[in-house]
Image (cartoon, rainbow, N blue to C red; front, side, top):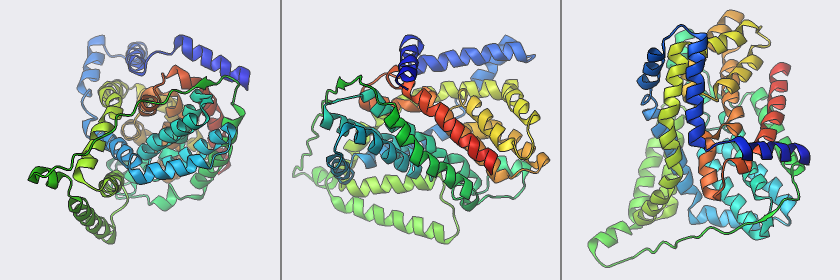
Length: 433
């Protein structure tokens, strides 16, 4: 295992560019694919890229809000105290790797934005406690918990199809698929359980002797000036936070009583207003908000470029070609497996669960209807494919790398091992059920 990890790490250090450069290379790769495998002219392909460059703005705002609200909640004093309590109970560096893995898996299952940030903070806290650790592995292990997000409570595809979803209703009119058949289905929970058991053991197996001194990040203390002016009193008045949290509870409870499902916007509501409540005053909340924006900057700037790639894939027909290849070799029994693998491949070019659902969802759902496969399982197969290769797609690693002050190459060797191993586990479950 040490030789395998060292090989992957050395390859990543030598050849893997910055995440933004990676998105530019992917754009050119898809452009060349369009020239080779479709009848479109170079000008038409460039127009496809430009047509959709801003098409993910609304979805990007939702995703950024997930990240910002998760970070604001993770930086509250209550959550920090909980993290320090967990850190104090960890007896050794091997246990630190296991604890980070389990913590990250649980947190990302609950909410991917919260999980990404809070597991990164825990990894840094543990690294500072033990001073000299394999920091790249610790951070990669914290990021690897992201694998379960699309099978968890903040997964965009299962939350979308739990309501009236246009993509699903194109193929299955008026159908909505409850969470009991997706996130809380037996086979989905089995995948989650297996990963919860096996991923920490794999992280432990990948430990090497290459340890480094971790330099604590410089924290600039935030000074809250109480002041005596009316403005100061308003900004530090905790009644606002309590009142609007009460408003939020009324809206949330009212929505659930009317039969509304737990979707992306409600997840954002919950984490945003928990952060408002726990930060106690508007001033403290705004300070946390300003800090959170720096971790979302990489996501914001790369979304338009990946939207352009999505436009290229969709309008040129490349996404259809890839999907049809997998559909052509499928049966009702194997379609979930091939959907998972094709989803993992397409995710390199469309690293957005919602975006991938728009492009690939209709094709896979039509195949499910033709072959008599379960649309819930096919939808979740695509969701797991999207989540699976996120571990080696740098797009979503940016926040946790920013926290840890590491480069993509520092964690990618470990992420490759996590990806290969988890792909085998998930594929086996899809073939079994």
